[in-house]
Structure formats: C-alpha cells, structure tokens
Image: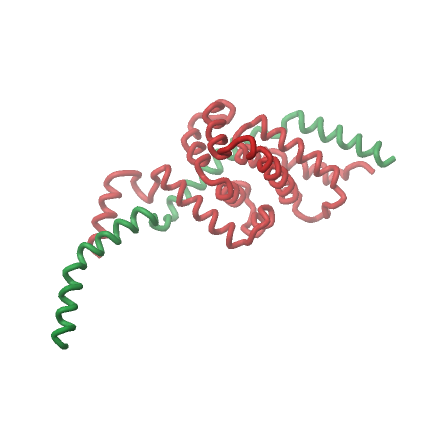
Length: 181
Length: 79
C-alpha cells in the first residue's frame, strides 16, 4: 500500500515549517535538515499510527521534538553547555541563517532557555494553539502559557523594547511616574 | 489614639521613604512591567519574520526525493 496521496501532500506542506522549527531548536541549518530527514523516516515508518483527519503538522512536530530531545540528552554528555553551544553555532554561521537584519533578534532568541524558546516559536511563529503546543511538548497548557510569557519578557529585556520609545526618555518617565505613586 | 500608637506611626513614617524606594528599585530590577500590546506585537512580528524567512525557502529537493524513496520502499516492504 503506497502512502496516501493526501497524507504525502500534508507531509510536504509541513516541511518548510518543520525546518524553521528545527533550526530554532538546534541553531544549525545542516543539523536541522538532518533532523527533518530523520523525522520523515520515522513518520513514514509509523504512518499507521497517524489518524487521518487529525493534525499532521502537530504529529510531525511532536516526532521531531522528541527525536531532538533524545539526541540532545545523548549529546549533553559530550557537550557540557548545550545552550552555549547553540549560541556559538549561531555566531559561527550567520550567513546560513539568511538575512543579516534578523541577527540581533536571533542572538536574543538564542539566549532564551530552550524550553521557553520552543514554546514561543510553536505559539508565536508556527501558529499552534496553546493546547497543541502543550501536546507537542508533553506538558500542561499552563506551563506553555507561562513559558511563552517568560520568553516574551526576557526578549523584550534583551532587546530593550518597550511601548513607545526604545530608550532614555521612556525610562526616565517611568521612574518619575513610579515615584509619584 | 494612644501615645504608643502615635510613636509607632512616627517611627514607621520615618522609615517609609527609604523602604518604599528600595522596594521600587527591586521591583524594577527583578520584575519587568507587564509587556504592552505594542511590544508584544513588535516581538511577534520579528519572530515571524525570522521564522518565515526559512518557511519561504519551500521544500528542498532532498526531501521530495526522500519521500519518493520512502514511498517506494514502503511499497516493496508491503508487497
């Protein structure tokens, strides 16, 4: 029995987004593409456990994330500081990540703890609901919400973004307002 | 109001400026104000731009080929 046409199309449709997620997880395009490939092999081998009509992209994201996590645990014994390693790989391969104007944002993103980063990406970029993201990360919905909030706050802090002006006057205004209360 | 209460109020009142100042600084340092909509929108925009930069690259050929390969293998395995 060949792979169902609709299923094949759903897999193909998910690949671009799956790659973006994989790059955000491991910070390296080549490694990310290997992750996507390994995910596809696993998905096809277990295609019978996919229920037609359910969310294909959530299913593939779950496989990729689980695979990455088990690899990551193995590698952590070899690489002491995995997040530092991630940040280094970003610095050493800026060209592979496309446009230069995103560099600052990527650097900020790389400074987030990995569980916060993945939650933010799933909800803020991949377009999953909190419930779907919780399912993919195998945790409670509340946990995802709090990770996303912490990730946003930390990003704003690193990038110095606030409502209105970026720096200076706003800080002073806030101090004055806080003092007058 | 008794004398004792009055004294206590005074003592507390004297310490107040320093205490509240310290508390305020601590609050600003440790717990940033809740993000406004504008900030959330800007962060979200940048995040999607970074993500969509990869998404817009589409499906690299290696994955199209891989899927064909896996599909054929699947056929053989099952026949």
